[in-house]
Length: 183
Image: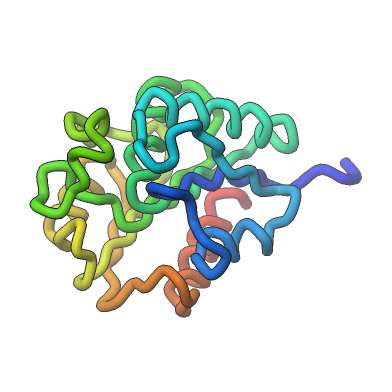
């Protein structure tokens, strides 16, 4: 159909959203109308129910553009994506790209700011997924991220340095993996 996206993307940033140099924002710009960013009311003091509701709204909008939707989550957004998928296992989701999920039990987790996220747990996801972690993430050790990937039933890849402001080749490779789910 003319004017319809080949695939739609739900962009799920972490606390406070993603600035203009963040890889998610660059992906969103690159995908144009095919990308829908969540808009929770609680960006700075995240509330899990609010974020899951925002994922639902963005998913509804994105799936109206194309039936195949990929969730593209970063940091705390990974847990919002996971919680949404857990509550919507039959929604046709082509995949989930989960980058730098923070460890809610780790010492750097923002427990005060994100209190409703503290009790989240990883359960098998109903779609293909790729988890990307790094050796330099202060919010999650590579071992914890690999454990989340295993619990989610996701592929796991570790990068020596992830970086969020400058899109290294890893983000391009991530795009290739995401594209493979939608062919």
